[in-house]
Length: 489
Image 1 (tube, rainbow, N blue to C red):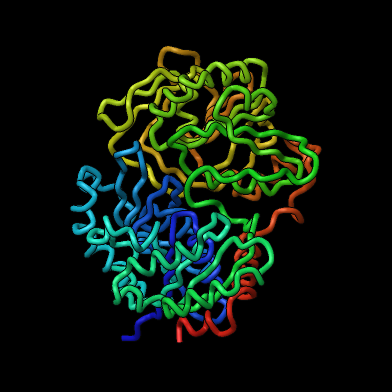
Image 2: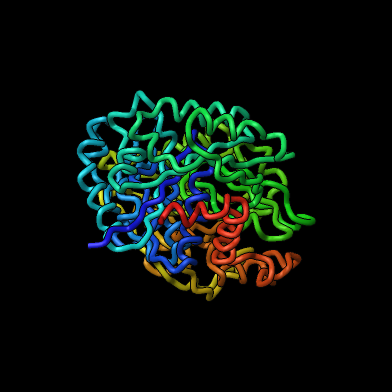
């Protein structure tokens, strides 16, 4: 049986650019006619997507699309979703595993390696090229014995590795040399090249650094990638940089950036819309000039609700709603808008909600993970433009939300409890993630809907395919001739 060639993108640090470089390689190899699949053994992120078999990290989801492959759980067999600083929900092959969630990290790695290796073996057997992504640094010597994401996966797949560093942070040559020095001989032998990422300035100033580094390590610097401010992909972790608003801002959208925010990558398309200013709200001042307020998803709804109150954002949200400002709650944000969070099984926590929708959320042990397509009913007020729009998205949540039995009925504006709207029409809660990635929703909201002064989107927002092609072109243009083909030769 033939076995795929494996190319692995490692980093000297988190944030070095591994994810988008791996995405670019997925598209580049797919354009050469190879059957390509991405792989990351273990991902720690609250940005997840629903795929065949359950959920995986968003980065591997987009890498699969770049590879022109159907995303599935084998591409990210282990997903850790942080719920607190010292606790994560463990998702193995797409499904929550409570036993693993309670297990110590070092013991967990040994326990899951057979399933991780099995997923990798299947992808290697079914494809021509597997583009692998590491995590953090492969030279975390305190974690080496338990690290299944970096060199253990690389050896298992017989991968040739690129080591990426962020030169904009400073100390890039030290990062590369220090990482190389801390690896053992077998690991070093897998390094096919160093990549300097986020370079700004005069390239001639790099000499003789790359040459001296190669003399000391035997590893050539195969690419110097200029700073790419807007690569068009969602950031894998953390709150992304909003950047400058293109043109004059006609609409300001504030997204509450609570500590356990999840699926924040779904707001990336809003950054690309001319006339829209997107801001993160961590205090009441950020809401003062907002036209819309979005309460996003949360991996720990009750804790994020407590944070909201500690920051006095609860009063700011209530004031925004009271004056008729548009409010949108998505998943955990929907749950927060209700009257109460009820947790009989110890899943998330009990708490009174903000009381902007007469709903009660009860947390259940079973997790809802599925794609959904549903039509909005008749909406009123500032969200009226969505009336009748068929929206495509996905659900990932433990809570089940229903009408408060002791209060006046709320208007259900989507079937099966997917969306509700208040009487005034300005507060909307939905369980569907991915609304702003749906062309029909964007067209309704921004081409003559809520923001009539914002230009139409059809020629303004690049497609994902165009983004993937642009990244592949960028890496190819700044890589030494023959290197990308040589990695799979």
